Length: 459
Image (cartoon, rainbow, N blue to C red):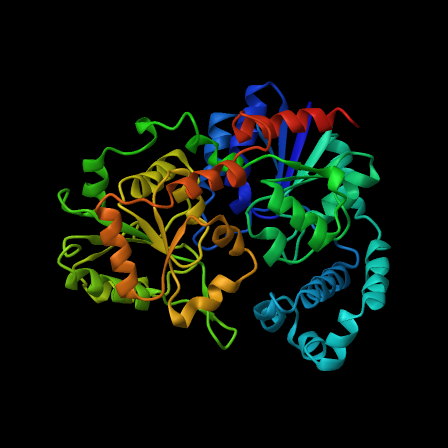
């Protein structure tokens, strides 16, 4: 079988790397169409490693529409914005901030009460969609897919703003080749745009995310499969101490005294403030918790290991300049866990932590999979971040300890240090229901690959 993956940027490759490797192991021919535009703080290490390990992996450059390019892009962004306005109560930050995807002159028109009222009108939305669906398929992209001649095409992230994968979906479907949406992250279906045409099938992690495809985007339920999370497959069942660094080695890399316990603080891409703007400085929270740990006699020896998010490094230098003796930053420049070495470093930082805290971050998924207590910080200035539409998946699962200030956070740390782990049952249930394949004991990467084989035969 010949399988084609399409992604507009190489930074998403690590999400499907386990599936690519599994398909190659099974003897299938795998092609990647991938955008190679350099992306800040996102190296292409994962893709390079895959190419070195599998010389038969074929990589093609991403093609872009030429005819009607600007018209197509802005029409689709209008439809994305209309979708957001349909859910304005839970997308109010995006209502304000979506202008970054339009030229200023167009945003000045779109961001008016008259334009918003029109875009919220379902009849007008249908007219825009009819116009968008009449845009002709890109001839060059259609020819490229015909030349590769895949049995199946998988597209990710597909739903992001300025989604270039749409052109490949439309071209594949015009050629009668099954086109699949492959979910890249848990927040995609509720915090991005919408779909511009329906894929033939969708592969999502779990039932709650399948429900979002149906109720937020109108996908037919019978086209959706629940695969679990392929990039977390290594954390389940077969996980062992070979997948982490020795404790002394991790502590040496961090610069920590091996006799001292630590909590891991996982940073977010951004926090939302009350002005509906993205606030990027989490050092306020980290330093407050550090001072509170110092004052409590039961936690005075506990350090904070800060793991920066590579897209939110703006405050890290200030945090280091504070020279707070309890605070250690590692890795100093942040990194995505996209290769074996970096995954091992990331998992180790979670594995040896007494607990993990943060505000709203994807890292909670790995933390739950590695079965560590999670503390979410609901500080008054940043509680709106936890009102973003995807956070409810964590809150509803009931496995997060919650603290409204530094004092409460330290009390929770003290309780955990004493051996109490009251939400362990909920955490393990979350992992079972949210991260593992529905109705199968197979690892997600294998189950995902089974479905590709099954659906690819339907051509």
